[in-house]
View (cartoon, rainbow, N blue to C red):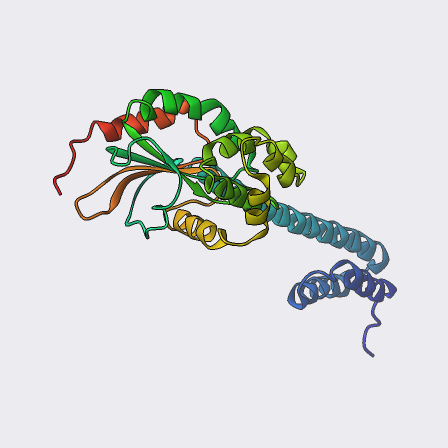
Length: 289
């Protein structure tokens, strides 16, 4: 007659099935086999099985704890990789060498300084952008005094309206419309100074502040889409040389082949940074065409 299995054998099976659900069938089978072997070899099956079941519970809990610790380690490693990637991006230099052959869209853009100045600075900017406003209120006057007014620099303003700025494109159009009356730079100053009003969508109210403008002509021009293509071409050329947001600046010299070579400067960097790059370009011997 076969030896009857102890009553705790079935209990062990049930407990193991509940506790080991997250683990593989092979692991569960191994633990149940151990329990069966122990039960078969002990005379005092009741107390022995209780002891073995207790040990099995401890082992299952230990395995679960290990499983959770491994998951936590994986999450920590993933978070560390993400931080490293972010740090690498943040540490990326805001100044990079750049060269491009202009597509001609800059030729009708407003500029200050001599037309044939040795160094060209293109600003890809947005009137609704806070860092852009900071640059034009704080750094631009110094740029004008140190370089533009001395005939060393040609400053070209290029439109780069950021998609999330709902009124930036209309502001760019308003500036061009004022330019039809020879008032681009006065309107430029008004838009730069009244960013919060622009952010609220009060484009017409800003236009009305330009007292010397023919307001009827200004309003009619603003209602049209005549400058839309020009604004889009400016933005496209900016993106082609590294602009991802506003403001961005290209500073360079024109080569014999018509290519502009220099650096692209990302963001509203402190004025000394911009000044240093312009001075480096001015120190370069002009190439013979």
